[in-house]
Length: 269
Image 1 (tube, rainbow, N blue to C red):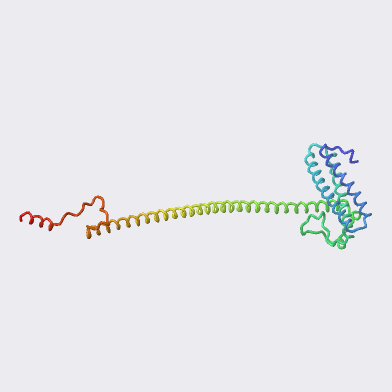
Image 2 (cartoon, helix red, strand yellow; image 1 turned 180 degrees about the vertical axis):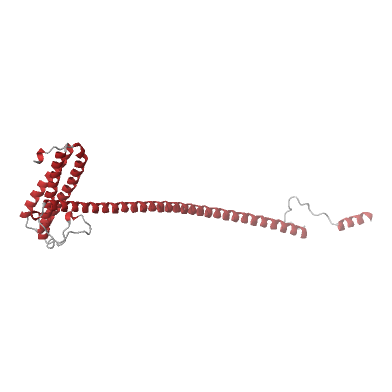
């Protein structure tokens, strides 16, 4: 019947993917009956849960495409397509109920549809459980749509949390970048100060060497001046001392007046 439905290429592709997933779910639950190990059963149920999530996503996409094309299709075609959508929802919910049965058998007390609700769980399998055969089509559809809405709300809350986390991460990255730049500037300033201290130390050493050299020169000049003064004093005190050479530029002492007086006296006699 589904093959005779008039569908657009997009709807036909989505419908085919949903049917492929349903076949995979049917085969998976058949293999699950043959598995005796509880760990392998849990792993198989996880894989089937992934298939159910994909079916849910595809059914919602099928519904969106159906609404987009609703104005272009005749009423009877829209009715057939909506019936097919409800049939797929019913089939998906039957697999969900089957999964709950297996989960209850494995001893899981809290059963979460698709394991996507953070902290929101379905009632326990012993207290509130209806197999697909005991539920009407409308009940199955309503339960499936309600579960899908709850899952969508959970996804939206998760998106908000992710967005807030991204914003916080962005602000933190900006702050870290600012602090890194500031530390870089501080390191550059410390390098400049260290270089200035080294240059100042070298300059102080050079000034110290120059001062020491000037002191030595002044000391030598002082010794020379003292020596010259000493020679002059000795020459004046003892001019006949032959051990002391005459100082260049300094005339020898003149003869005393006494000698001149004696010579004049001899001349008059």
